Image (cartoon, rainbow, N blue to C red; front, side, top):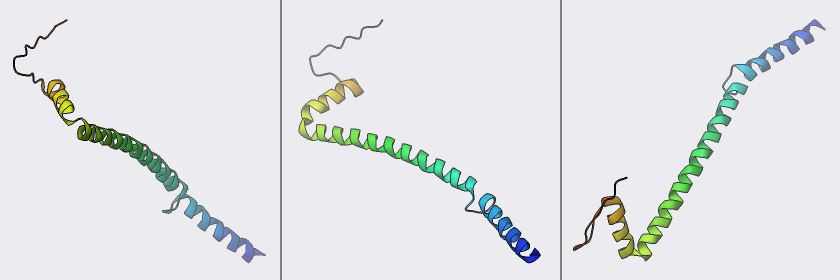
Length: 90
């Protein structure tokens, strides 16, 4: 009977080691689960950026002259010839 108890105790110690300290431990599992969640969130953000860029590319391909003029005015502050630029300060 003692041999059976020692064998069961030995297997219990091995299982406890694997559950707590090995590469397949619960802490490692929890860490990897958290990492997967963060990567999914980052992936979602990246997909949103990609969709915005695709829409912008589609817009550039269809309405090229108007989009270029709008970007030049808004982002670069350019004006057409014979236009006067007024800046209103608050």
